[in-house]
Structure formats: C-alpha cells, structure tokens
Image (cartoon, rainbow, N blue to C red; front, side, top):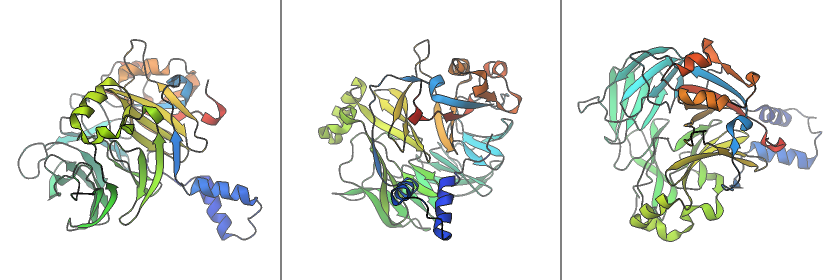
Length: 397
C-alpha cells in the first residue's frame, strides 16, 4: 500500500521535459508532440455525461482493490470515515459529527484521538476542514469562523478568526484562500474566492459570482484540492473546476449534464422556494464533486437526495455510470477521499465489503496488514479501499 497521497509526475511528463532539455530527442511527428503536450498541459476540456446510460457494476469497473481494516477498540468506534489526511506513517481524520480527531497508523492500528469541542478558548464546535501542517493538526470551524492549531496529542497551540462568510479554507503561503460562495463580496458582482494575506486582509478576489444560487447549503468536502502541485477549486453547484493561484484563475474541467442539469432553468438561481421544490423532484443533477488524476475523473453527483457516481476518461471522454445499488436496493456507501497515484482512496462500511467483491476474481483484491474478509465483517468500523479502475478506452464488460 502506498503511504503517500501526494501525486507524482507521470512518466510521460518526465520524458517530455527531458526531450526539451536534450537535443536530438525530436523523433516524433509534430502532431504526436502536440498531442502529448496538450495532454500534459492539462488544457481545458468539457465532458458530456449521459446519466441515463445503463449502470456498470463496481466489480466490472474495478481492475484491483486493496482493503485496509481500521482497528476497532473501545476508543475507536467510527461512524464513517472521510477527509483522511496523510502525515508520514499516520492517517488523521475527523469523526462523523462528534468532534473526535482520530489518528491511526498506515497499517490500520488505532493510535490516539482527541476531542476539543466546547465554547472555551481553544475549543471548536465543528470540523469543516482539516489539514496537517508540520507537526500540527489544523482545524477550521465554520460555525465559529476560526482556525485552530493543535499538537497531535490535542494540546491547543493557537487560533485565528476568519472573516464573515468563510465557507472553506485552504492555506497558501502565509495566508489563505477562502470559499465565499454564499457571501457575495459586492452588491452587484460577488466573488467565490478571496485571497487573504498573513493579516487576513483581502488582497485579491477570484471566480466571479454574478448570480448566486439561492440555496445556501455547504458540504464538508473542501472545495479546494491539490492536483500535481497545483490547486483546483470547484464550488457547490458550479459545473466548472478551476486552476487558481493567488493572482490567476483558469478553467480546467467542465462537466455537461445536458438537459439533466437542474440549473439549466435560470429562474431557479434566485428563488429559494423554487429550488427547495425542484431538488426533491429529482429532475436533474443539482451538484457534483470531481476527484481528478492524470487519466480519470471520479465524481459523485446528486439527484434529489441520492448520491450517485461516475468515472470519466480524460483523454477520450468515455465514461461509465456506476451502478451503486446493492441486492437489498440500498446503495453502496462509498466515500471518495483522494487519488493516490493511479488508485482512488475511498472508505465504506465493513458490511458492504463482501457484496462489493462479488463478481471479482480472488486475484483482483488483497487485504492489507493481515486483515481478512472475516475480520472485516466482524468489525463495525469502516474500511479504507484503494481502487484501480479498468481502462475505459478498451471497454468494460
């Protein structure tokens, strides 16, 4: 199992750089060189997704699966697992709405936890975002609009109050990027991202928000994500993911659901009651969350109150709609976390594992750190999975 969630440059990217540095490496045709250049430059692409395609079973979409059992003790009873952060040989993540911060080894052993919820100084009320900075665990509490720094044993170090309306936070240099999706900065044209300096002063505004959707609901999934040393931003309800830094915003990926995009009806964007009526009817996709690596986009998307999933080949645009239904007509509760190279890290309840593996050959999965299907099924703790998808361009059975 890989111990790092950081993305490494692809071999093709390394070779492309070497070709520029070493003379005589220009044996490819101009058209071939341009194709490689476009692929590695992450140029803007729009992908049409037909959500009415027949769904593909997970067993038919997965090439391989590695599963890690998370040790269950009296101190480590987990409701669900998401937002996992890697810190060397440790996995750090918040509990499900209970304020607990759990620390496991990368072999699934429970190490420690802390809970500093409360109203006193140094105490948070909720965990909106979490990241690791050096030896510190950093928590953003959107309710208190405060960022807190803690040692790994939970000892409070410091905190800072964020501006009004901050939805998500991401550290950049001495300052922060903040998601201001539901707090337009100006009367006529707001901006979705504020760039704050070390004194929390707004030094720039990015991604215009001229027509905010009147449905102020947030998600714990951070709208800022790292991708190959760059930073991406995808706000709630948007159909476009952007590259951004403190000065520039560049469109990266657009997903087109066609007539199945709920927001094709512009009149919904300023009408809260109309939105609250339209979403439960299930007439279209009202939000999606992409997870992007060099070759694929894994995304969850929302229709009514159902969270569904699809995977897109970035080069060809081929895509699969994943069949998330189990035999009992409930849905697999697969929670995407991040790409780890060419494998997607997810979590799921241990009770779903046996059915997920049905239809796959025994050689397609392995259990890490001495776990077994029996030990996983006897535990109530969720499991972590590293999934590699089959090549979409070659077809999936």
